[in-house]
View 1 (spheres, rainbow, N blue to C red):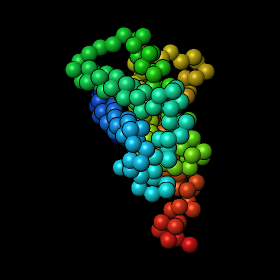
View 2 (tube, rainbow, N blue to C red):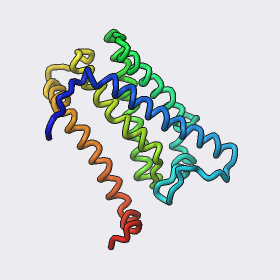
View 3 (spheres, rainbow, N blue to C red):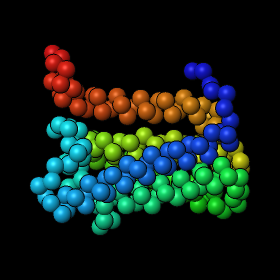
Length: 203
């Protein structure tokens, strides 16, 4: 695959600002829809398109409130922070190593949470929330490029036996991102093939 001749340090602030903003908007809409359905259980969610693409099927499950409150509230707080960091970098801000270590811990928690939610949504709940998938889509590059940025800046110290892994991630980050997306898409297509085949009348 061809590599884009863009340095991580140049695209990183824009990635955080734009990706964080998109994630914040998706989390905000989810929270708004959650409040509406709490007020009126008969409210028809705007994102209920069909039996598979149905936010309501996901939003009303225990997995949607892992810590006792809507998961989207975590998204609102987390993506707001990410957006602010991106805008600060664009304005020329500099942060100490401890800050970036904290950022790495935060996005690592975020991607692990996304992994868990993806598994629950696809294999346990059996429905997909469009706004959740938007969060998945932006969280993956935010995590990946925060990791690449921290590795290149030396904010994360890797032991000698992991230098090969570190170099691989830094060198093939675009390939990793593409393969990551493809894996998720293929998983969704394969697992819900019964639905897609009916939708497109494939026999």
